Image (tube, rainbow, N blue to C red; front, top):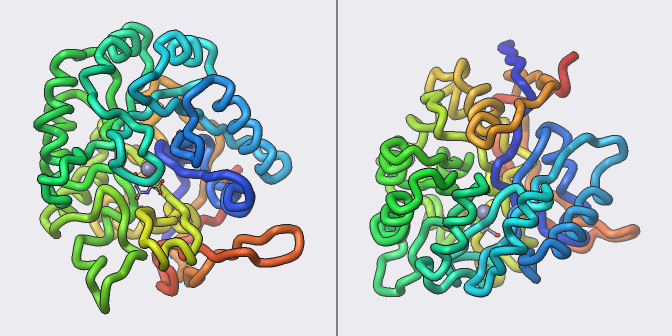
Length: 349
Ligand code: DOR
Ligand code: ZN
């Protein structure tokens, strides 16, 4: 039986939702991760300091007792973002970063940014104050094929932006292409990589009929991209770090409207570990999961350690969402029904 002890990881890209879903799923992250960057695309997006404070409060209240988990809050950028509110919120440690969603690029992004150039003044202030900019990197131009949206975004938007603001701390979130892997390395920015983009290619959405379980945004791409992502994640290179993009949707909605998002927080570490083992790169797992992110964001690594063991681990088909009395919904986790080879044993002394 193989074991691995690593510094406790952080999740640098996570959707926690609100209300009952938040209450039912947060423990999957808080148990094994020190911190997580919490995405602001709630039903009413987090666009103000007040919104972030009350969202953070509800997250802290949903945590299991005596949890030390720290949610890192983000501000959702819009065409009307107030620069003062943003920078104030950053300087007062309310916001850890700002999130840029191109309008209508993904779930709850209708209030996102319509014209990125209009935010250049804001980016200037973010660059000056060291506030990180997290980017959902896809164009929404309907003329652009959905499988090309990340590459076109890099050419049309990200490349001029990175050139104009060379000191801005940019993270290209949930990268899905070899094109993005190359761009990130050549342009001194950071990138998160999800477990699902390391496991599936675009075939998964069409296997055995249309399958929305594997539909997320950006969509998984061709196999050659998955291979490039696996190379990047397991390389140990500083610019690539763990961001699960775990995005729970109730089964009834997922089945009904096929909303984008894969819920992986119950299996994220085990899922990544499977890939690192397959790539003979377990030695680099701590860098990807626990060191590269803190390094990029200039925060200390966690103090605690986590012990992982290679032992068969059957993944449940569904996670129940319960209120005080009843089950009110179900969420299907990534790897549902599969047996993974790794388990998280717990915090190591
Ligand atoms: O698949 C996704 N789901 N991609 C995103 O960018 C958003 C997320 C969600 O909030 O469900
Ligand atoms: Zn996301």
